Image (cartoon, rainbow, N blue to C red; front, side, top):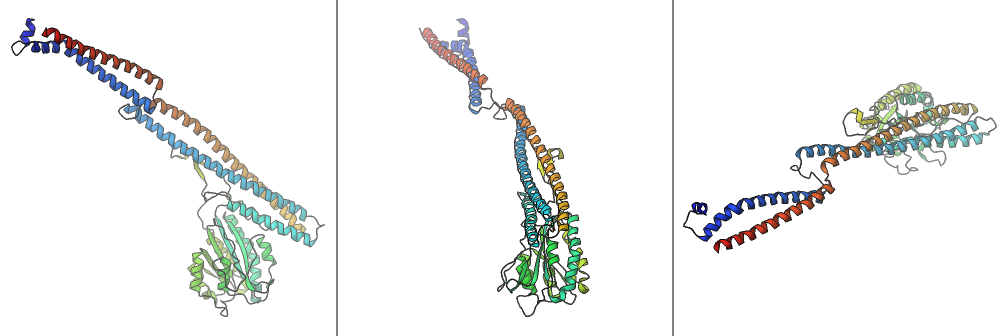
Length: 490
């Protein structure tokens, strides 16, 4: 082989000849085998990773463009799943509202039954009093259900709730003032109703409890407020100490020596709590309880706002308490002539509340209004808002008026319930649509991201065969290499 000798750099020897032959005959084949085997092993590694993870694209290098698309789809899918939870929360809220409206409807039906019964002239006075007591209980329950219907702190049936308690002095000198209160209280309540405020009114008296002769605050509750007020007459005793009455009736402190804490029962969802004390008397110096500033501090801690309607001469006895709690003093006028003005001023100040904030549900992944649903929940279905808070069944005419009032209230509640049902239907529709879209998006993402296990398993089997064949050929090549060496060395 002259060409072999020509390529040698050293005098001829069997080993040098072998190396030259190996380089020419086996070198190229070995390189190709190694390269092919490397590709096959890399393909096997990729196949094992896809089968092991179930993903075709588990890292950016697998499919950079596909990964970007898949991540975008995944973001939308995850957001839609959260939106679907929102929708179910909205359905739960609507279920609470519907249940509350159903309970109010039942209460109104019972109130109508009582009204029809009271419209008959065959009843005795004692029987009418029994009807009235049950009616007052029903009226209180309507307001209670409306105020307590909430979803995670969001009112559903009684938005913009305020609690107002009237603390009235019934001493001999308050005869004219009491008449003015009775005459003006209807306009006071109407101000709240027209403003869309769910005002719950409580009534307490600063005087002697005639049941046991102990001076205390007599809590008359908040059902049939106007009727209860109309029944009040002066009881001809010196009023109890005003500061003690304020603390006791507000719930800030139980007064030692009194019959107990006769708080108005403030609602936890109320946006404000207000006490209006109406008296022409100064603080009773014979009953020294505490100072104005101390009373103001305790009432402020309970978040109770105090307004005092009193004489100009006595305004200083209440000014610190009123201003310290966010309220004011108002002139009572001669024989209560300015009580109406004072109550109107107080009602206007209490009606300055944020506008209704309708409950909205985020039902999809976007930020536009098209991705939200505003729930049609009624804002006012308390007894005051339904105009059945002063039903009077103690007379035939009052019972007849009550029938008309209850019928009007039933129409309002029925309309509100229809709105709730419509909101529920919208939410169910949005849920079905979202679930269908989510399923389609998940399928699209899966086609990009997930591995085709059948195809990948077949590829792995093929690559295993190719790898085994390549390694077998390389072994045979090594064997041929040795045989060639032996032949050359003879």
